[in-house]
Length: 134
Length: 277
Image 1 (cartoon, helix red, strand yellow):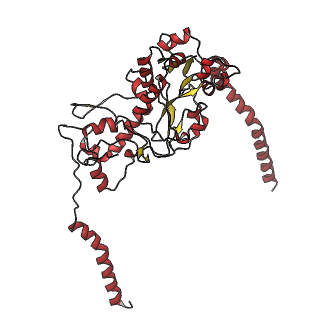
Image 2: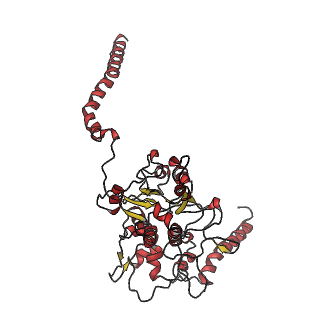
Image 3: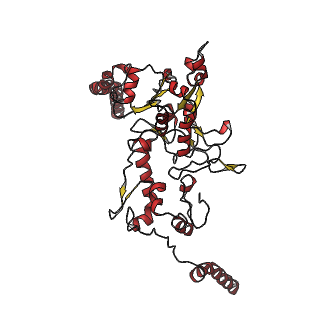
């Protein structure tokens, strides 16, 4: 190989630069997974927690189709049967999860997803911030 | 050599025979299954009669005389509806969003508009809204099935699916659909387009068509649409709501007793809104 030492030095610099990003994320900064604030005084959601974590958007779409298209507007029970909930983002989910900022946004910002729910649906008014989060 | 030519001619002959025979045999096979396929439409009598009503079909009777005698009642109905459904006010006729509105007789019933109308008719402001047609042209025009007819006969909008092509607006002969040219969440000169948000109902976004949904969320709970409730609070019987397919419902009884007209019935859209003039 020609210019063996130059190539190896270049490679080493490249590796350091490329891995520094990973290293920075592993050591510095707040890299804890988000902990969305759960509503107080409620024991269960409409589905199990791991289903809600992974597939709440699927459930919301199912609810939307059932309610608007099929007219199935009956209430849903929570997983432990303690509460009946309306199949609605605005009038169901957000009745318990009263803060979009403390619940929805924590994970969505961490995962850098920007759902368009709130382009139309009205988020509950955030009490602490004092301004309407719409 | 001779042998192969003979084979070739035989094969060609057979192929030709099969080609000639296939359509004849095929049509025979089709003919045997034909009566089953054609039997059904024949039973309907060529489509000249009205189809037998099936299921629920919600409809309205609007007594325009009662609205005429109570000025302001129609505006109250509009306010209740628009306030609940977060309908924006753009302060500009071109951008106007309306679910329910008032219009002059000549504009609501152009085919009934004639020379020398009486003063009452010409001064009337008539309440207009989506007709929730039994054969809605908007539903046929919609390329995404964002608008559709629900089981109760109401023409619904799924705002999630609307791509804003406005085909439905071109198809609707009643001007019952409005397009959000601007964002309803915005404001002009510091005045928001939606002054007070109703937290129970979503707003819309820019590029979406909206219209009356005959309060599908209320009728499902056995309540009357908001405008009907408000109208009847003012004057009993100003609007009658019910199932047009149920012969004993209030609407059906009213329709049997009173002479009513529909908007542009000649178009064949079969509107579910009837007017007592």
